[in-house]
Image (cartoon, rainbow, N blue to C red; front, side):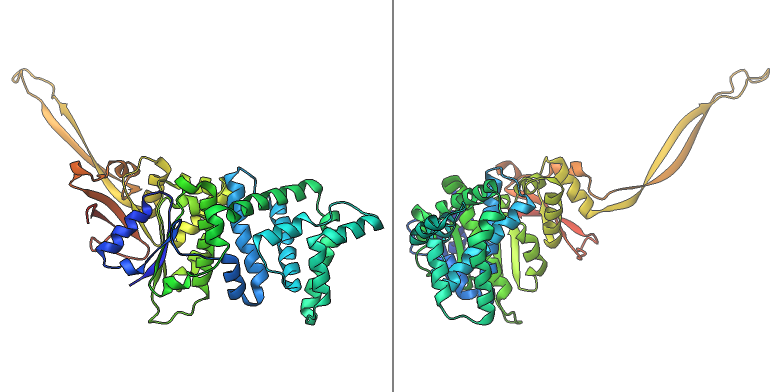
Length: 425
């Protein structure tokens, strides 16, 4: 029996999965992660324990994923220079705390950034700054501790960044943008129930899914809004990394990732994960209304379309239901493909011979002409997806779905099949 992770956009999603678990006799495998539940996941402690030698880059990429969503939600641009600057800042903040043996937490990262020098100072100003700065405290602690030659080099780079490069190489406006973006994301994750769930202890981890647990993130967007999505995106990213780390044998239990209204949780890392998910025995189920939902989720433009194409290309099974969105239906038709089709045309005419002296009424003759023309056309026209039955009482609770699976020929000899899918269970 598979375990997996369920992301929730709608408030009724957890109850739906409780019903699924009851029907299948898997109530004991269900873990509902949310308010009024006992489960906790301190993702920073978890990543530090699992990250090994690359803990700094792992944490940087984790924060960048979360911050990319936060910036997207607020309408911010994803400028490459800005992204590089944020990565550099986070990398040096985390390294500084790591070498100083200071706990790596959202609050401490923010303290390092807030207490870094932002203007040139004379000797008196430097002394005053050193007495009150958490950034300087970490530098002093790191300097005093024994380190390997490699760690010493990394520490010196981090210290130099905060003592000079942060002030001299990054424009003040960029520094403020970085601070605001990080602070807005971190603030939501440190407060209230989200802070309790993600910043205290850990009694549930992604690895529990590999043992058959089904973790439902009961942080629906309709109740928790952007911070709920950010928290679920972080959990998803950590879960994907855990899947990629595990050793897979023939007896390894498969796992799944499920997201209805998946556009809320889509990130650029999904295409990288999907490229190897099959070999890791991980099944991804993403549901959405239309392709435009995905394009908008990744910021729009050519880059977003390329990313969506990469993600969809790695999702081998696609199911299309009734849809009135033109581009989505066009995509479905293109995916299934075209074939040569013969069209026959018949024309009809009459001819009347000239009359003569002996035959005053010669009558008329019917003439028929038949011709054919071959054209390359969609096997399933885009318009056909607009008329698929949607189920409900009038449709006997049967929903029609066009199922496509890459590399498969169905019993009908095609690369797709039309199936009735029951709504009742």
